[in-house]
Amino acid sequence: MKAIRVHTIGGPEVLIYEEIAKPEPGNGEARVKIEASGVNYIDTYQRTGLYKVPLPFILGQEAAGVVDAVGAGVTEVKPGDRVAYASALGAYAEYAIVPAWRLVPVPEGVDARQAAAAMLQGMTAHYLACDTFPLKPGDTALVHAAAGGVGLLLVQIAKMRGARVIGTVSTEEKAALARQVGADDVILYTETDFEAAVKQLTDGKGVDVVYDSVGKTTFDQSLNCLRRRGYMVLFGASSGPVPPLDPQVLNAKGSLFLTRPLLAHYTADRAEVLARAHDVFEWVRAGKLHIRIDRTFPLAQAADAHRALQSRATKGKILLLP
Ligand code: NDP
Image (cartoon, rainbow, N blue to C red; front, top):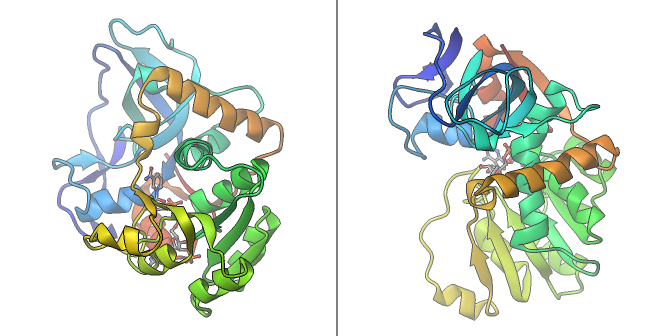
């Protein structure tokens, strides 16, 4: 089969498209014939070595397709089932071996591309808005990179929960998209001091929660945007990792809460994966959650997909098609 493997960490050029043996499922595993694989920012962290993975490895954390073989002891799925998954390495390929408990049935009315696009970023937006800081009517949330893959979904879910959403984006085009999916206010953080803008928009009070996936360039100012006892949810590092922090800062800025969550810890067992994916797919089917597929690339051009994602050129999901 064809796959994209990483033999040495580095830039997009280390993504090598090559022929390797089709893998066989072991105990508790299924083999999925992939129809679409999702590209996610975590893939760039693993490619560059920010997140360590033993070499060589097949990149990719998310896909949708059809089960074509199962290993011993698998009860969750059977060959022929339409499935999607997230948080299992090896999705940039024609086939992937996945722990069967991670596979979610794809409902009628949701196609493979939508399913691949909904899983990782959709379940992330779901846990951030529903569990890490469960938004309720009257809350105000600041969402950075609001026109990104996670961002567009997080804005929509936050609005569904009744919150007021302030988004940040880098361009007017992205601002229009964020507004289109429901953001109440949008700040161009590349042109405007977002801290001052948030203070103004909240009459000096600050927001209840900041969902910050940008990291290095936004973190310090994000803390200043919070109300007393507000919640700082740092969930990514698109601009680079945040340096070590003195906990005393949280005291000085108003007894703040800080968490650094990870999707795998919010999809820790089959019941949790099924429940979260079920909500996301039902919202998609009902037309409440719009999945924006920004562009698709042939699997062989995964390096170009990474270049697009890291150059801030994308607005929504990027898929690879084998
Ligand atoms: P996005 O589509 O959001 O792409 C990243 C966006 O970040 C860019 O489009 C850009 O938006 C913004 N950005 C700001 N500064 C930079 C910079 N210096 N370089 C590149 N981009 C920058 O990606 P994803 O939706 O895949 O992921 C979003 C974030 O969420 C990532 O940080 C990812 O690691 C994190 N994540 C975390 C998870 C978790 O469980 N912890 C799970 C899933 C994702 P703009 O142009 O508007 O500034």
